[in-house]
Length: 123
Ligand SMILES: NC(=O)c1ccc[n+]([C@@H]2O[C@H](COP(=O)([O-])OP(=O)(O)OC[C@H]3O[C@@H](n4cnc5c(N)ncnc54)[C@H](OP(=O)(O)O)[C@@H]3O)[C@@H](O)[C@H]2O)c1
Image (cartoon, rainbow, N blue to C red; front, side):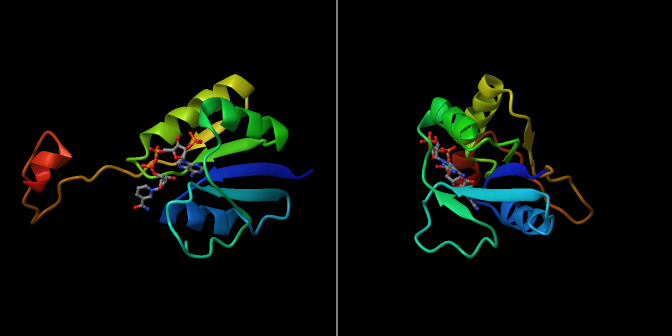
């Protein structure tokens, strides 16, 4: 039996994961990109491009394509698609796995300055 996996991508990690999963004959992988990049690097698996139309649209896609597993491997700053993915998984009962980057840990030789926002970091 083939397991249909939808990976929400746009990150190096998503592309690497897709490449590894694509080796499995029992997995059918589709990688989804938002369409922000004009010429995205080859992802190594079938790609679909563009928004789904919110959580409801993504839920409809999951049902229509009979997706067995949803993997959220989007960028940490892409908060809306992650929220939509969680909601669509809840609506459809499709299992979801979120790939999260580990936070930075202070290491020897670092010089940390803690700030409250990206704007503060920039200034
Ligand atoms: N590699 C990087 O450095 C980097 C940095 C930032 C963002 N990104 C990637 O760029 C994409 C857009 O970022 P953002 O900040 O605009 O995200 P966002 O604010 O969370 O998403 C905005 C809308 O874009 C659509 N979308 C986002 N990711 C999608 C995906 N993988 N497949 C299909 N539709 C997607 C969704 O539209 P609908 O509601 O219509 O479905 C979503 O509601 C993300 O996929 C993210 O992983 C990569």
